[in-house]
Amino acid sequence: MDLGTLGQAAGMFAATNVDDLVLLALFFARAGTAWKVVAGQYLGFTGILAVAVLGALGASLLPEQVRPWLGLIPLALGLKAAWALWRGGDSDDDRDPPPGVLAVAGVTLANGGDNIGVYVPVFTVTDSLWLYVVVFLVLVGVWCLAGWFLASRQVVAKALAKWGHVALPVVLVAIGLLVLFSG
Image 1 (cartoon, rainbow, N blue to C red):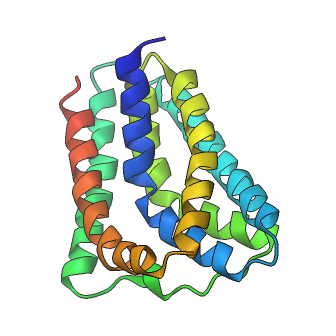
Image 2: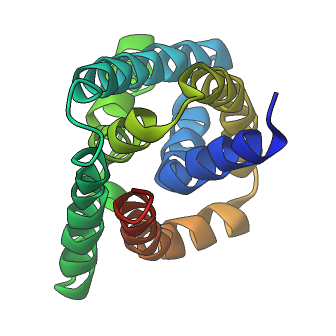
């Protein structure tokens, strides 16, 4: 196992799921039982991973010199998020998520478009696809614990709600540039 790749996978998961911490905190604050939030998060994130892996496997059919250009996807998503932020629009903070398993899964999947846009290009150029998948699935559990923790700490939850959307465009642009220049 390559510790560098392990660190990259963990870093990418954390960077692309900052916004999920706020959502998870909201879900846990409203849920009658925590298992519904955890099950929904795993169900939704498994859907995100399935789409990303299938996309990467399809993209791997592309010539090797074309693959880094897939970095334009997260770059575009980051620039779009930065533009929306600059214009004053951020719909993620306005959500009022219901706490059922399928509702949590649906919101997780719907909120995962940016994740898929980042994961497909990275999964296409890495030799450690399955290590990324395993790390991501383990970190979903860690994220659930962090979300539960945040749900009981209003000061932290408010800070993430205020600044998490600012970090997202920066991270997406950085990942896009990393993939572009990996070739």
